[in-house]
Image 1 (tube, one colour):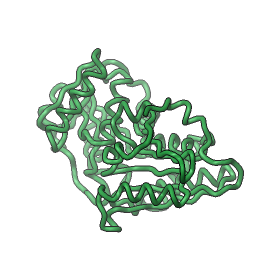
Image 2: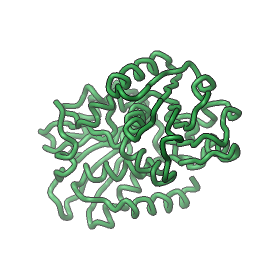
Image 3: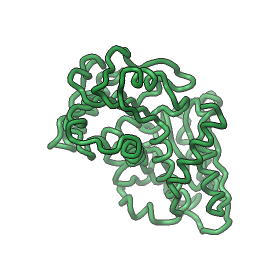
Length: 308
């Protein structure tokens, strides 16, 4: 079942007022996530009581096979919704009773809402695509056709799938996918080519091959995260003719961004996408219009306070 994005985005998920909302995040290794504090700060500013609960698979010793039970428990406990992150964005897809148009097109879910309460459906959305695009345009305004000629995307998982749709939608002429699982990159390229016949979508075996002649680089893998340090490619491949977009935001200044700046690249850090997708998720969870600028300011205050 497909549900128009605008219809669900405009519909409050619970009665307004001081009613407390319970929401959460399912993912692995998420203890240092800033998302709970970001949502709770915006709720307070709007006079809404909201509690954001982390559901960390790594801490609980669970895998993606626990998703059905976790979704059932959250619905029964009265959660208004859940954010979904690595490694669950694609695994949660078949567990949804309905999907927004965007989640269906992307093939991944990062936000689940329960609009009918415990007895209602689980509806999957994806705010990653619009969040990434919002952040990129904020950090690197004025990107035009020459800079969008050939863009490399590292990572064809849930986040990568969303960003690929957003990149093609904003005018990238050729998108080249690279993944540690080449078959996943090939499958994603085939799907995107069919959905975007006027764009060129290819896949490459490695970053070195993909980056020949590239004008932009998007990193959408967990490499560089606080618990997964390192670089996703040889820094010698970076050069001043590239712009680089990072999705990892903890730490905010990743090894990739440091190498990109040293090479003279224009860069966009992962915090911009974190804020952009949270703006959309907050709207879905509460039915309230968030203040994007206030959420961005809150994010940077949280980063400073946590030393991220």
